[in-house]
Image (tube, rainbow, N blue to C red):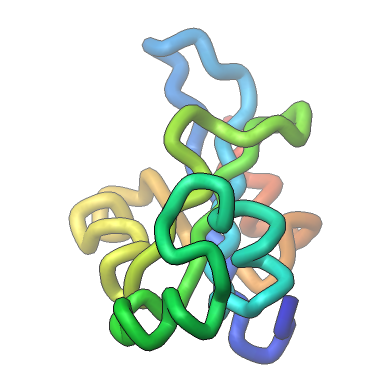
Length: 114
């Protein structure tokens, strides 16, 4: 994973849905390694280079994890960076926040709000 181009979003817990801890979302450029690990078995064609030729706008992968490290249903997702980022409304309402680290104080505040 290319850390320089990776975005991290901490989501608030969905208390109404029974969540105690918010999900963590990582968006990073789609590499051959990530393609082989998460995407290859679900798409045609099966090689990274062929896939990139057919779908040049699919440049990133988003992986959303629960607090226990398991991925949420429907994750990972692939698409452009803008397609995978949280919607503006989620950011504006404070449901998700872009963070440098999931260990940062701002990320922990979202996970454990007062």
